[in-house]
Image 1 (cartoon, rainbow, N blue to C red):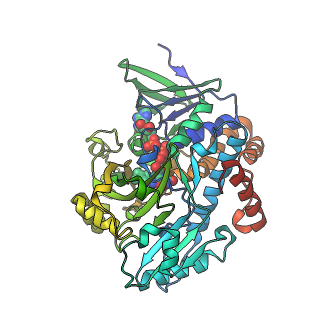
Image 2 (image 1 turned 180 degrees about the vertical axis):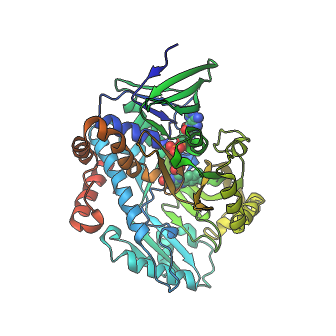
Length: 492
Ligand SMILES: Cc1cc2nc3c(=O)[nH]c(=O)nc-3n(C[C@H](O)[C@H](O)[C@H](O)COP(=O)(O)OP(=O)(O)OC[C@H]3O[C@@H](n4cnc5c(N)ncnc54)[C@H](O)[C@@H]3O)c2cc1C
């Protein structure tokens, strides 16, 4: 049978594919796009609401985005970048809501204050320094700091109920914070995209292999799982948005830029509150500091959520040892990902990161009572009966070969073929929040040749008005844009 042909193949139906698909179709409505998803429904892996924390990462409360230098000063460079990336996300969503391409914003985004909370002299000094640096900048306007336990109790009563005030403590709060239901957002983006001419979504279709043809196009081998049939589809552009499974698919592509990447999976779990009275008393996302030596993924947080119109409360994440790359994956995923190019960097990263190995083993052996003890650092009155353990999504921590060595990456990593014909997103944090920024880089690489760079630039400016300008350098622009996005996204 002659293979089918399409302009764009998106592998996976998470937030990354949804964002790229919607952006490409906005930029070039003539594109034919085919989406393959191995599960029977859209967005059931990391992008679904309970599989991530829903934090609109804007560096307002996450202390690991503002590392402390040896002299005690705090570096805010990464925080400025992440904050502006999230502003791009809000602008993209606001444009789509205004055009009726996304449903009411209340379905996927809410204002929730973002707080940082620390205990002990050293961490209090760090929080003061961080606050002092961030509030010199207009992007972080309105952030408040307090050392007063009574004020912290006003901001977040659960933090202070039953707490003995026998050590220094401090908190910051920003009203710019958000909670995002990335699952609802993803399905919202697909709602519009899949109604457009030339777009088809194939559920229960698993991409098994991909190969570059002599004419430069990609041949993608797909298994129709429901009918047990194999299909081949060809396309000049493939995006691997397969979440944890992106790494092995990237390996199969054989592109030079993917050589040497490896990864190991880390499962996640939350404590979810089941007591409506407790849930009603907490309206903030409160991030603490990860214990010294532990990885950034272990930053604990007590998080108010709004999921499908219902307030919710979670604490975590707790890490667990696993060999699956997807929540609905196979126990053989890790073994199958090993290749000649990545075995050495992976073994060497394991050797260099004994702290991480120890942390994962400790986390895996936690008892229910020990998990509640961890929660009591945030909420001293927490009771075991009010909380249940639920599984979060999978993270696959990326290992990158740098020279002869392997380096463990905790960020979100974009790998693309030099000719722009294939790209993949790996890693987690800041993850879903920066999907729009990632796609603002990727979309032109494919479309410039098709519709011309000037046309791409001007259409992108309609979708994300500050593209090409720096909000970090322009206070008036920041104010104007935030007023507009807040109105469109109904943020207060
Ligand atoms: C515990 C945890 C907490 C997090 N918290 C936050 C947060 O607070 N804020 C934030 O911004 N980000 C957060 N993240 C990160 C965020 O969830 C991810 O970065 C994001 O959801 C990844 O989206 P994706 O589209 O790449 O992958 P996914 O949402 O995982 O989607 C991948 C899709 O590809 C499909 N697929 C896989 N293989 C194939 C194949 N071979 N063929 C066809 N389909 C395939 C899968 O079934 C799945 O539907 C968190 C992640 C975790 C794990």
